[in-house]
Image (cartoon, rainbow, N blue to C red; front, side):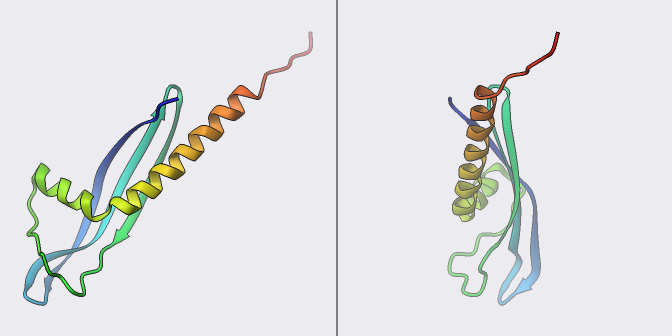
Length: 105
């Protein structure tokens, strides 16, 4: 059973000014969906970024490259979501394989 994952950034929130930086992203909301055949599960989570000691500031851009950069900031949270999704899909599969419909004639 292989699980295929898709992920996307749903939204980001930023402070207009933080120290000497503008538009500092402090919150990222993402969606991860896992599919395996007819079984699926979805997670939507918020990640609050530590912006107290910014050493490598990256300015916001509406580009694929920037989105990929944001994913690197939240990798741990996404990995945890994928583990939970995988567990859920495995449970669905086990239930499906271990249940049957009984009828009276």
